[in-house]
Image (cartoon, rainbow, N blue to C red; front, side, top):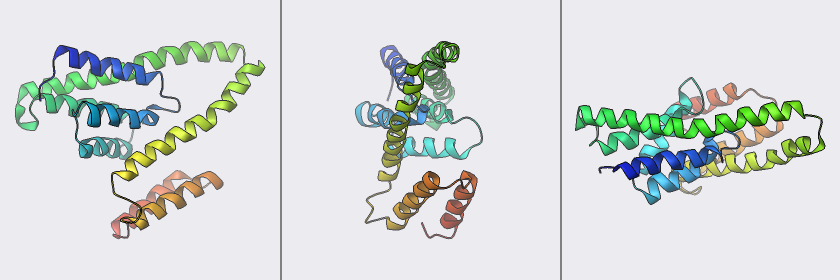
Length: 196
């Protein structure tokens, strides 16, 4: 697969548009990234997409690192894969830069301007209503992201224990103040034991 200059521009502009839709973080736009990169453009396989997210989420650092891995994989695929030599590595770095600048620049600029204005006008009724109204949208976007990632593992009938643990974890996060690291550790232990 080779990408033209128009393809690289399309990748950059798509991530720029998603940047402005990333309410609640870049992970909330993962369903549309999947649609665009995997289903529509076929620049990534389903496995590459889910592995990029899983690896970035497991690694320490910012949540947005999965964007860099998606860009890396698009570029690496455009350069012929790991065996593509220097060209593949150059395309991979180009993919990282375009994806990260695309996802960061618009939202960072807008966030800076809006936060500054919102802080100056924090007592306005409209500002308080906006903050309260965004909560359900963020929750819905996170649920859709979780659904996309879980659906890649098959139906609930095929992987019942995995779906059960997911549901219990969501309920615990919602209803308790249990620290997420304990839940991650419990999930890792269940996976290590081969129960999920």
